[in-house]
Length: 376
Image: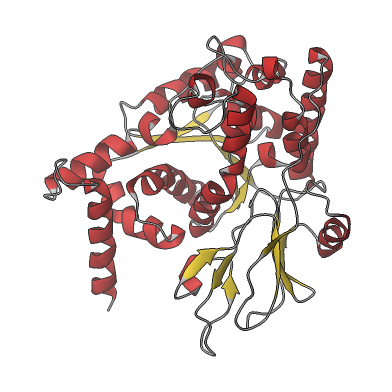
């Protein structure tokens, strides 16, 4: 059995959150074993996996899927006593549903205080931090508040590299560009798939840019990579929350935003494990409890509509960033970096044609199998 341990918040804070059923106790997440039970915070910001096929040779749980034969994500907001076999986890924390703040300026002021609290918490620790910078408002605000070096990754003609250059210029900041070539993807796809425990095309495409920028950041001597993850989910950054199309079940923008927030426990392990695989510690200031709580209190008018997404968040960002950066829209990282395009091209060159179902996923799986065969 794995030694009792917990990651993220200190044990005293987690014990308090357990006793009070406090969903947002002022942390950046936690998970692990505490006082004989498994716990994972309400947003699942720290990965935790369990293995239902427990044997004396295998631990019942782990922070990385690769440590288990049959890893399954432990549910966010749940607890379960340690035993063999592990019992079904029980929900202990739920995402709060506070009354929205009716005063728009007060809501924006509260969000600004929360973002500053989150950034100051990061800066309190003695870390050598760099920022994964795409030129969008999320990473730009993180970079400005942390005053950390900026790194962007992408193929030479990519949107993200161009956007990062113009944003860094507007902010008066230096920028390190990590230029990619197809061989970088061929080399790192198996490493990424193994680290995240997933081979589906979308997850691998999202993880690859993080891994490749993390490699360079680690090589340059940093120990922490800060990211802007969480802003789109918390503040209404996706088109679907406005269109309310087949991708959401909610009938209102506010409901659709909450759906997005509830998707974080499934997404975040991919990003955390990817960054950790490069030897770096991941930091996501915009996912601090204080920011989450302030985001949940934003009125509908400060979320999104057909004219503007992440309205309240952009109002805060505009207090720190040039208008052209605070108001900028950007592409998802797998498209903005052109990683999705180039991975598709590599798959087709390897014989995995688009007429095949999920051809890129099949290509990823083949590279992983090849890598495992070569290691034997």
